[in-house]
Each structure stands twice: as C-alpha cells, then as structure tokens.
Image (cartoon, rainbow, N blue to C red):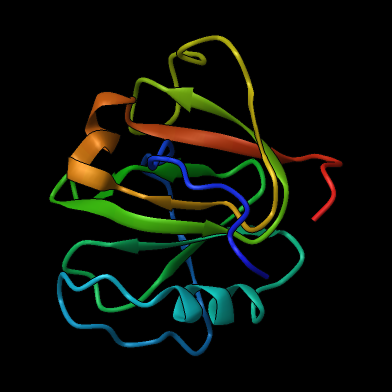
Length: 140
C-alpha cells in the first residue's frame, strides 16, 4: 500500500485506543518511517482503520471504525505526529476530545485507504480535538 494523498493530520480525541499485539517500539519523538506505518496496517484486523504515532509514545496506536480518534492523548500532552489510514473511511472532525459537540465543519471527509497524514507544524491543533470515522466504499 502506498500513500495516495498527502494531507495535514485532521483527526484525533479521547477514548480507549486499541494497541497492536506486537507494537513497534519507537524513539520518543522521532517519526517512524512510512514503511513501519505501512507494515503496521498490514497486521491490524478488518475493523481497524488507522495507525497513529503520537509524540513521546513508544508504540503505534490504532483505532476501529466508529471510535473517537483523538488528535492528542494523555490530556493533550502527546499530539499525533503522523497517521496512515489502513481502510477507506468517511470522517467527521469534532471540537471536543471525546468527539462530542457535532461535526466541525458539518461536512464528512472521505479518505481512501493509504492516505498518509503528517502533523506538519502542529497543524492538528487548529482542526479540533478528534474525529469519528466510518467505513465507506472508496476503492483502495
């Protein structure tokens, strides 16, 4: 799977994230190579749609469909550095860390599998606090 779109990180919030069964240890704030995100996507189950690397977090964190994906974890201390979408989704950005408060803007955003989202210059903080994503039919 190769990245199909280069976008700025849009999604994140605070729920109980799922972790990979064999997580890849990473240096504290060093972005993992794309190939590591890609390999992680190949190991997740069919309900997992995204693999995320957060600042100062040793392992990738994954999120399932309809689960709030926070832009920061640990009470905002660790921003998402980068994410790779393993499945095609339609997402709604939310203003609150628990993905409550409705979509902002109220327009769903479709993302095909393979979309790579780096958090360039901490842009993610300007978008909201998290996103909720559902499966869609966009081909890989």
